[in-house]
Amino acid sequence: MAKPILRLGPVDELDDEYDPLLGRSVRDEPMPVAASAAAPLDPDQSVFDEPEPVSENIWVEEPALVAAKPPAQTAQPSLLDWMESPAEAKEPEPEPSPEPEPVPDPELVAEIPPDAPELYEAEEDVPAEPEANVEAAAIIDQVAENYSEPEATPEFVAEPAPEEFEPLSSAQDDVPEPEGPEGPEPSTEPMLAAAPVGITSTSAAKRVERAPGPSRAAQRRANMKRSPIGRRKAAQKLAATVVGTALFAIALFFTLLSFLAPLGHPFDAASSYRWYWTLLALAAGLSWALVRGRSMMIASAVVGAINLMVIIPSLGAGPKGGEISNAVVAWANVAGDDKALKKVLSEAERQKASLVLIARAPQSILTPPQGWNVIERPNFAEPTSIAVLSRGRWQSSTIPGEPTIARTAAGDLTIIATLPPPSRGGKEIGVARESQLNRTAVRAGDQDGPVAVLGDFGVAPWDGAMSQFRKYGNVTRVRCGGFMGTTVSQAFGLIGVAHDHAYVRDVKVTHCRLGGPLPNGGHRAIYLYLAPLDPAK
Image (cartoon, rainbow, N blue to C red; front, side):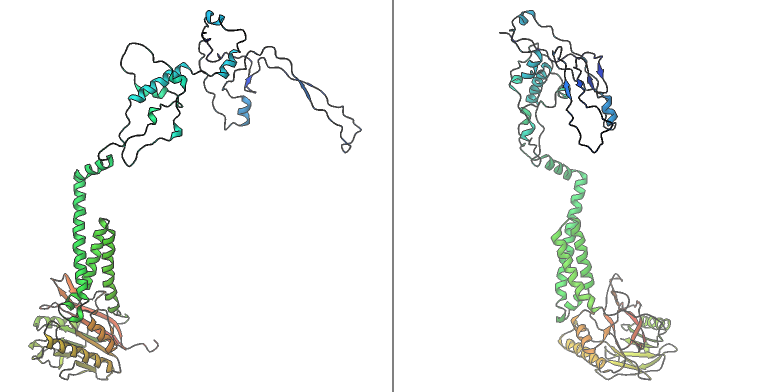
């Protein structure tokens, strides 16, 4: 038996009885008639009396004339809704153009049994798929089968969720493909755009297989490395790695050698450059930071921190400042050079020094410039001998094998000068050096009043021998010439070490200045400004 042709949908006709306040049509709507059951009001009755029972309103509906089909519901909003919520009111959507109603075939209509259900009831019970949707679904299936998914990277593989894809109904699968002459394939983009959102092909839900070979990200990285920018970055990274490794190796090696300074030369010489091993370690850490080498960066920082822990406690105290004192004492190692001696004496005049201690003085010191008096002649046969020049009331005395000692006429200030033998000699010279340091420390510790010790000790202040000297002499180092206080310039003044030192006790140092580099040795003169301590403090 042939199936009857059903209506695809109601035809929207113009409704002249559409009520904008109610938002619907009032055609063929029964008018309710309410029977008045209210009791008449009694003017003598009080509002506090018992109220009489009120019967409920009885609505009597008129019988419907024709119940052919339900009224058509339009998407046009009512004026009452817009008045109640004007902010949420939306513009009415344009009504779709009415589709022409298909004319039923008389032969098929005649075969319909008389007890067949109503037309609109058949639409509700057996929903039919519109022909346009069926054709669109068939086209989407054909396009999805021929469509190849783009190559996905191994890192990011798209796997659709199972709930996002619904299988097509059996009615859609049974739709035959349209027959006709083969022609060019239609464009898929407009078809996909016009297709309903809810229809999705089953083939589109297949899992994307990972493509063999390198991923797109790996290919991009390889292309970047082969590009000029990539090659330049690779060269910079390699240079930073090489520089960081070299600087760290040098800093670590000489830091370990510096801890062997008590054994003498050359370990004490390596210890004198601890400042530079610290700077090399920090530079190595920065180089490793550029290439993100965290472990090597931490190791470089540890090496630098170890050196700083050794250096900082031994630097001593800085000058106190205040008024410039008249008691100015100068110390210099001229290394037997006449030009260096003249430069020191000219600087001492500008600094208003009253006492000058000269180590390794030349023969010309016996005829000093006008205004200076030689109160202690040096022993030129003895390399550790010290000459003393004065422009005030100072006294000096030297005992063989002992450090040079100078005092004021009143005896309220003692100045001790020493020049121990260098540590690079043999065993006998090492014993003589140790003896000279011990005698100087003992003399400084035996003084009752204020005392200051100046000299060229040949080692850095953080050397182990200088730590013992501070302890036995009960003196404090004065930081002269800034934080590093280099007193010996080397490598054309590019680097320097601190070998000349000043130590004091029970005396105030207002200023401690350094002179310019001297020829034939690179030493700098030390100018120490001394003042008595404040009794209140």
